[in-house]
Image 1 (tube, rainbow, N blue to C red):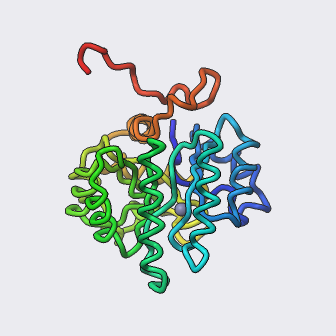
Image 2: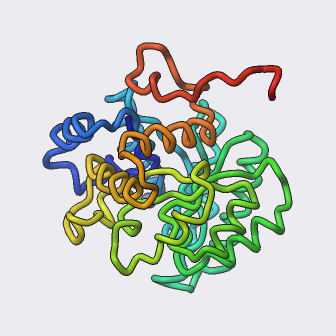
Length: 277
Ligand SMILES: [Zn+2]
């Protein structure tokens, strides 16, 4: 019923009990988990997890802005190699993070733009990490000025005006734990922006939703995010799952990976009437 569109299930935070975490996610109704890449220190762990759960997990590839440092060109070369090797669900997570450290701000911009260019070349969506940098990233996307550039602002934490700009540029908004926080500020975004552009995510092991706030997050908790959104939308968590899964299907073009025997086959959007397209 749910797609967790952003979860670091390969993180060492899960090394003690990963099979149980995966089991709880399945039991909570998560039919597909999408893994964002960080850097070469974890690419192999991510790919091993994907190989271990081939019907249930899909990996992105990319360089996380917090991992952009002196050696970012070497890191990007690794990403480029992976891109050439096989199909990927998206390029991510990429973007800017000006919260922790601004030392490599220029390099973050260069790495982001390089990966946007690849996304256009490979015709892939991007998954954006934007911390204290939403306006900068919107500006960079406008500068790229290519309608093929599309993706999601993962863990969106901006205001309605920023959300509108993102949506107008063809982007989706990833909603996770922050959407459940009293002071998260996302209620107006969820009420005013088109539901067709909302995706569910956890960003596990980070940012656990209420009522698990402050604890280690895990993919099963995506249901708490769905419950919160269902309350706002005056519908059921199942309906939120159905709609957001179709949104994810659309953005990530999951037809590319879907097989009738995979657990998430049932989440695909209804086939549109060709005449109306
Ligand atoms: Zn992440």
